Image 1 (cartoon, rainbow, N blue to C red):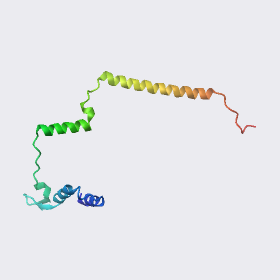
Image 2 (tube, helix red, strand yellow):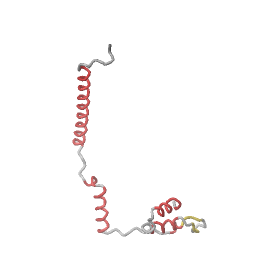
Image 3 (tube, rainbow, N blue to C red):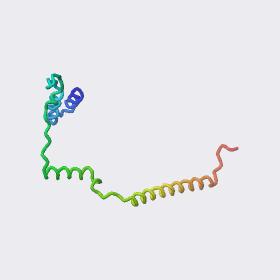
Image 4 (cartoon, rainbow, N blue to C red):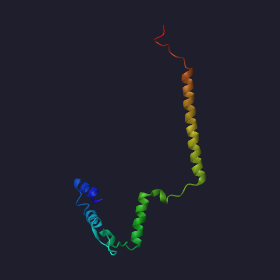
Length: 119
């Protein structure tokens, strides 16, 4: 991961903005001795701590969900509404096909101009 991300960040001149990510990548990609006498990434030794949940955090998360997924908070459509929309779509498609068919039939019945190549 380091070989891909670090050069891309340097090329984009984003080292300052991505300093935290770079530090984490350095730790995650560094090998160290583990408790079971094996070696592995240093990130295994880090203990991740989730933030304590409080009302402000819950409100912030809910606001983000409402912004990103507004349909999540809209009432679900009833089965009748969904079926009515589907029927309306099928009827519209059928009518469009009929109109196209009738226009093609009218063009086929219309008098044709004689070809310039006829003798």
